[in-house]
Image 1 (cartoon, one colour):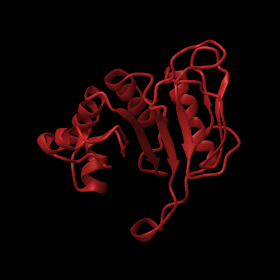
Image 2 (tube, rainbow, N blue to C red):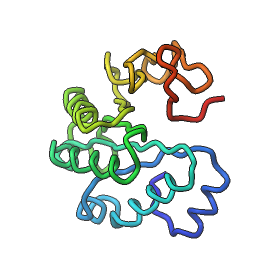
Image 3 (tube, one colour):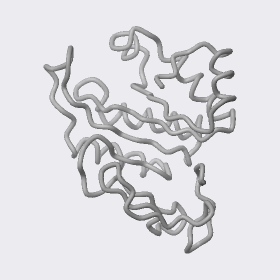
Image 4 (cartoon, helix red, strand yellow):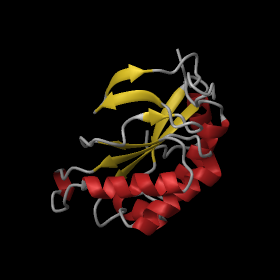
Length: 180
């Protein structure tokens, strides 16, 4: 969801789901006004409300060259998520592919996505992923405490899952998520 929704229906919806992946498209009001015909604050409020509701929340940021890919924008976005939602909140940086009215922009480079991931990890985020592009690193889940490989992925396919009852099998740390 893009989470641009009024509070009352949002809370009602959240009471019926166990998890949500929310698009956080940019960190400036100008970005939301120009590209989304909306404003930043309702999305931030919806993110905080979702996290506070107790459901599993993941955040996805579509990294668009020249529009929201500057290192300072990535840092500001990551810091907002960490401070307002917690370092355990999974964060996905997805590559942009030029389509429709944005064909004039280039695709997001793997290097830019790696920079975004490295920035988020350096800022203390536990679970940071790269999506929409085939890259060697950036899709697996490691334990934030001992760095043991927990989930191995190739693109969007899970090839290994070592999580045991929501815990790391090596250090027994509880891993944020919904585990069936």
